[in-house]
Image 1 (cartoon, each protein chain N blue to C red):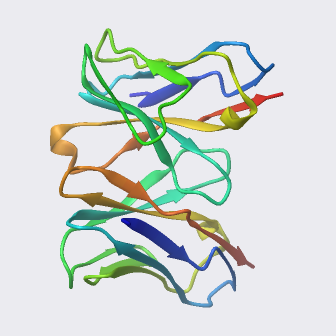
Image 2: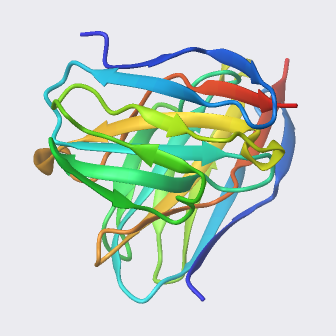
Image 3: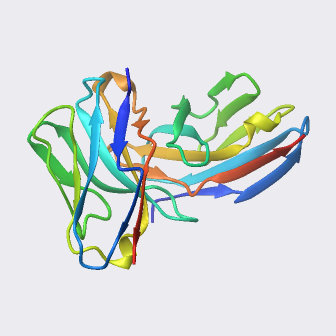
Length: 109
Length: 113
């Protein structure tokens, strides 16, 4: 069955403590993998799209990478304002979009 | 641009009541979507539309209905509300040149008691 799994469910970091979030997927054909940020009480906000294995995208302290089976969202020297839930979504070749359950990141000062 | 606007933000319904969640976008996007988000679960697609007059079922359509009479508006109708419909509902829009990116509203939190 096609699915998208994010790990860990929750992650607590100290300010400045770098880490990575994982999104693993099993779909028949990948059209694109998306990362979104969601703040409490808000809608998801687009961060990155990755299309093929080996691709990388960066934005401030965030870097997203993609392999054939998973994507990582690397957070370098995080700040408290990076606290949010990070969602991964996979778009299949038939345009179906499948979301993971998210990783809730808390960065303590 | 206001983007995607959803109303109401919060609503409490009694079992069996009906209501409509409103969604409007000012980006002239062809595609519009309704998702529900439950704790510990990924966003689930309820209904979507690729243009005015065209709607189609998503993964979890039962108990819901939609219409798309204009490009801007995509209301979601709940008939005979049930506790299982307690959730946070998100409307989103997109376009052919948006490369798959979805633009979300701020959500509507619905509780059915």
